[in-house]
Length: 390
Image 1 (cartoon, rainbow, N blue to C red):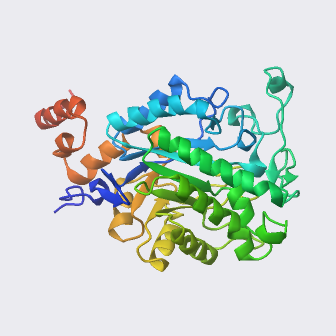
Image 2: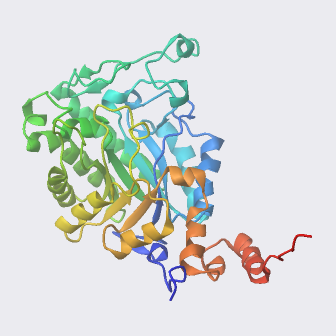
Image 3: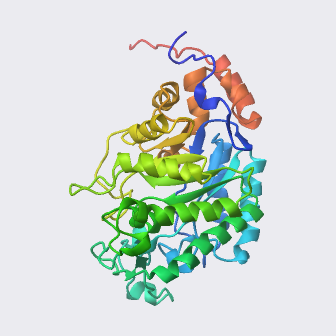
């Protein structure tokens, strides 16, 4: 059997997690679009995410939904800190489900990275141009007053007495996502945002019950998991995104640390670890130095291997269908997540099905409105005529 004629590509086999079955192993990553209006979805978001459902992703995530207003990256972020957001989110979840994808939501608190311009505005501190639009600055929060990137507002040190309210905000947001009809919930605990800044030794110098040694620094991540698991229905899966390594020259969070944290999260009802990396002391994952393809796959493999039975998701410069298929075949991860490659090609899963499974997959995977025609076109195509030069 040829490389491009796999009998049943693993990417297109279903995956069961808790009480939900995903139709395939391909997941659309949460990606901030920065076009929300006062935290609310717009028609732009609906068409943006609907493309990926039609394009064949078995699971489609919202961008990060901020659990507190002060936890936004920018004024363009989406929110879930109020019941007012539920109706539009419910419409989105229903749209994704009607198009064949499992609707998934991600909860976010940016912590020290809050209060910024949109990326195309410069991604720095808010300036008079934003002030003129009524976009005034607010104070970020962090477990270290020294956790600051150049050009950003310095954060305010979190008081330990403020932490219960933050945990409650995550739990309330989980309840709202359930009411909106999402089937999967993910907690964003990576990329230098609030939760990651707590468990990384590079981001936390507050001491006390939520600082100090690894157990103290992990406490917020674990308590948020417990609170969300209580608020989120038992039959629905809970995912957790981690920065598996800080990647810093001067130490920081390591893959060994992640293996330990993943095991503790599992004990608290987390069903899958979404394995990313970096973010402390850097602007964002989209602005770091160029990385090699598949650079984060070993993180998913290690977490999965050292925690038998705990599924993982691989993400990060996965662009070739054969690479994605091999990640599953080698047991490196259970799901494969695409981000910016999907922006470039929203039909990536459908095209991967043809690459891996052959033309019959026009009828097996593609929407019949497309596949019926494309299969017949493929069957009727003749070799291009070779015209000899005169």
